[in-house]
Image (cartoon, rainbow, N blue to C red; front, side, top):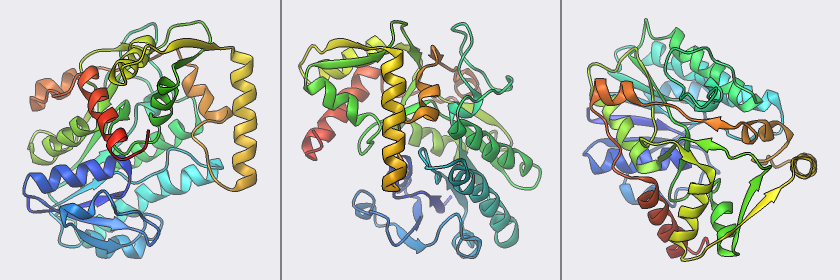
Length: 327
């Protein structure tokens, strides 16, 4: 595979995919908007094409001639349900229609999904492929709708769906707040119940994308991805503290206070016209006792194994934040 289109190339996950492609001798074509920040991908000398997943015409020209496509574009925060659907659902429809119209012979399409689309794990049993899906937030519902569009095209296009849990790593802003709190000696936790999560380091996610692009077994499949171990939230915050040579104090936030904060932050975001990662809807995701999954199928069928454990990934993320003055 010589050339691959990356949608959402200037974003957190997309940027790591661009780097992984370039390091492995594959020329990335990056779909970017005029407002996109290109700081973290320009060094890999990709081809830039102007476009947007909400613009079908721009997608048709972007997919032409590509050996592969990695669909990373979408939104993790939005001001309304309509906005989630516009990007995470309609954007998927636009991309797959463009591929059918202009590049039906594309060798592989990797669709990046989300564990939020499948829903939390019940009774501590990790989610697996093929289970009943029950998202709890508007974000999760929109990602599930987008995933169903990808599934509906599997009979006409070589689509593989890669489903990560929470992703962290360099140039991620979602986890940055936890590092900032740890720097101040704090480890916030909502309520008294311990919560469990599966995680994946961004560079391992990008490696899994490469495996899906290259393997003949992958087309038509869905694969969950995680780093091999479920993590108690206490373990995650402790690893962040250790990376910063601090011992943050666990601060329990009462549920009512969390709901109030989510309401206030959400209202402020709507007034400013800028979406936030924490509002009453996304709080539903944060309050689930367990977001764990199993990547057994990915390991067995594609032979994929992550290179980074939690401590290694957190430490490297901390170094990047520090070197780039984010902390």
